[in-house]
Length: 319
Ligand SMILES: NC(=O)C1=CN([C@@H]2O[C@H](COP(=O)(O)OP(=O)(O)OC[C@H]3O[C@@H](n4cnc5c(N)ncnc54)[C@H](O)[C@@H]3O)[C@@H](O)[C@H]2O)C=CC1
Ligand SMILES: O=C(CO)COP(=O)(O)O
Image: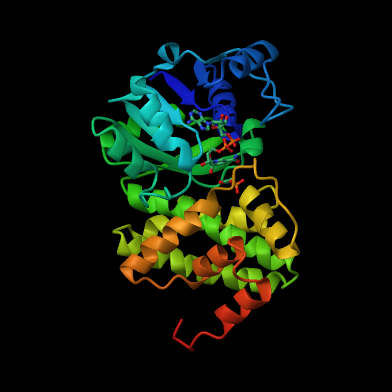
């Protein structure tokens, strides 16, 4: 099964490096020709993943026709996925594995939903779970969830994406896998804000736990299996992202909590996703108070003290 990675940001580059270390040829596609040439010559992605040299079996190109492999891993930000699929008709009708985490603002669809919407003939899948690009690129171990409807194809894909450092678990619950990865980013912003505002580790633990309850509520209402949320794509990635300042979502939250500015060029998937999820939750009458607070903080409509008061003064309930 030949593999290409579409999107040469931090995660796409890390996946290319990790898969190519097993010796298989991997093509990494960047939309910008200068950037692709620079990476191909230098054997490094200076902008997004400095310090890690590409194995010989990575080829970087901006020519989409030379990147059309059996399996295409899509590693662009969630809010750019539709533009990628619309502007790149060569991707139509193929096996497309989303590697992004989020919910589209305009449609409230996740990565698999957007692929289905843009390209009904594609076979969509999602690869998600606890995996910082820098860790993957350095060959540090982790485990990920691969979700795809067709279990036979899922087994071949699982094999193709497994490396000595990457253990892949398989599920058919694409809704659960995409929601876990999307919602944990919202909770990471909340936890970062709490830590940034010096509310303490106990507050973070409470936010993670009640955030997980919100994730489960939304996921179950949309037909996901609770076990999926309890796995790598949900609980696993929630734990990583809410506790590490390697996470951009968490760092964005820290800056909100400290009242500091944050570089707008950094990809923070949870910001748009929080708004999309809040809209969906309101429409479906699902209670998501932490998500509401994150949306209020980002919009500047709530201060940290008000968000805390809003969460703590809710009517008492059973856990
Ligand atoms: N960086 C990380 O540690 C991890 C990231 N992810 C997910 O991977 C996705 C991508 O994140 P990163 O690679 O970190 O972001 P990034 O900001 O490092 O790179 C994004 C890349 O997408 C490209 N891009 C944007 N719009 C495009 C378009 N319309 N067509 C083609 N390319 C386009 C950009 O040129 C850039 O190279 C996100 O959803 C993120 O949640 C998942 C796991 C780990
Ligand atoms: O999803 C990630 C780790 O699994 C990366 O998190 P950030 O996008 O917050 O950096």
